[in-house]
Image 1 (cartoon, rainbow, N blue to C red):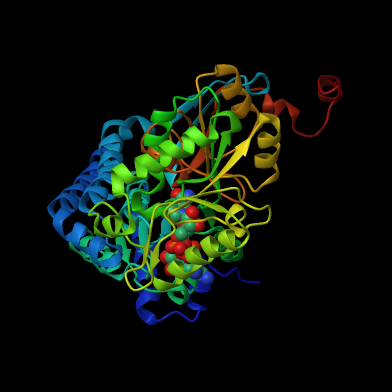
Image 2: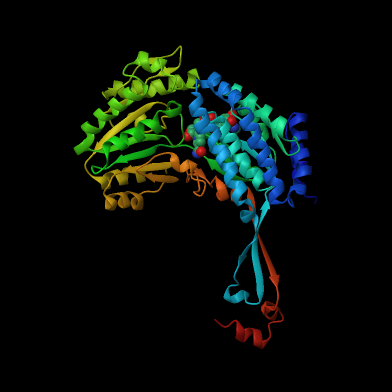
Length: 476
Ligand code: NAD
């Protein structure tokens, strides 16, 4: 019986010759990267950083074309995180790559052992549209730092960004090492049929399941960065002004199309009306008091396409039809894919906005009296990607952290944990598998290889024949 190699299995798929050829070129090239030094990898990261800096204006133009993203948001949320990731890797890569010595356990006395970080090989990075540059190049930094080759598949929903990502990669790397394949879900599923060594997917939970099933075929390892409903809890002890400034800043940036955006607010009843009034005032201050001003605001992006506009509007219509109270916003315009920054409260149980990931500028606010009930409710839902709690009462904050589970969390802040290079970024179960960023991203793209060197261990005394001495030794 012959065992099919990974490459042979690849040829069995119905891939266009060019994609298969690209995959094979990377497969042939990947082993040569195993012995690359930190310096060589850093050179590549520096080239990537220089390319992104040089094309900042083009990147801004592409994001504006695709979904009216303001240039400041592009700089802060697309470029800065990638450049920060590169700078962090440059500073620490040598240390990350160093084999990690581990002491012998009692049974392994007389051996020396270490963990070596080996590149996984040929990696696939599939990214979403909401932060197209950040979520394509961020994982690529980790893939390169760990010594892999990579094929990127950006989202087809932001075509100008996808084209530019392909151009930047083609100008910066040889295709044997890094390449972009543009296209839609069909292209992605063709790529997923290939025996990649690792698949790093960022996107919806629904597609995450499809990716994991495809990965199972070749037993490719996966990192899944998925979505979910991230709760935002406002304790009665919270500094309401600070809370509201933070909430408006992180919720409505990118028009709410952020995986870790606050998705459902729980506010203590004793401060609910005060909180809502401040929230309304803050939205007016940042984006304008009415739809006309908000539409003209240069700081407010657009919904990415008509399908998503209809989906988000559907959530709003459903909530209003069930009697929700509109605190702010509510205006929509299909032609310009505009949805006002919108706050809703008094939501009927069963409203879709309370169940589905919103991924748009709608903010449902629920009043609560009993923190235990909030914790139970969060715990009963699929594990969120992030959880935020605002307040000055340390005991209650600790109670929330201890009583719930989420991918990441912030106290008296939201979303910014994404930017902390030393924190793992990832979800759990429905919100994902594995971590990104810094050393965590490096490890996601590395295999931890165990290396044991025998020096004077006694393990060989335990081999057969099982003499009376061995029998005596193993009597527990
Ligand atoms: P999506 O899952 O629809 O698409 C993501 C990528 O998968 C795209 O490149 C797309 O072409 C591809 N794809 C789509 N259908 C596919 C299929 N059937 N088979 C294979 N590939 C397929 O997600 P999206 O709409 O681009 O992004 C929004 C979602 O991503 C939200 O749920 C959001 O929470 C999540 N997200 C998560 C993170 C994170 O870091 N955890 C970051 C951003 C977005």
